[in-house]
Image (cartoon, rainbow, N blue to C red; front, side, top):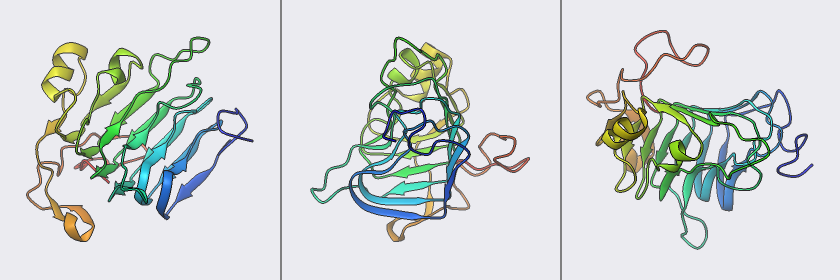
Length: 219
């Protein structure tokens, strides 16, 4: 079945992990079906227009974690979003983004299209992600439209809401950071955190997804 269909896409109890997904003139992958307990983790996406699309999670929950999305750009050198959520039917499924690193895309993530028939106030959850992007890292639509929950993230972006604005206006990102994450060697594709990175140990413990202490931000 196609995108937006409750039994389409990765429908139920599916895992996609350990892959390199590259050279796509649209999304690296489209997680846009039922997405009932689906997990996308440990993947590397590069040279795409968008990284991961999860705009049509109709049932959920869906978990997107420990992925690297970097070196953006399709055959026409166009780049939009590392994580695309604003396409097609919104659906009622909840999407979780944990410990991902987005580097060199135009934007970090956008908010879902509205579904007036089945709205969900807490559609998106962002914890422990790094958004090193050339434009908007965090947009106010995350909170104004989707009522997202977001904290313990690291933003290195030139536009969008600042961490301080998120705290003041929406009471979100209260433990998030901004600045330069410091990688071992981003130029060589090594996005392990440098020993003096402010993202080291600055993450949130997430049961069943992270260690019980000393959690880093990023993939």
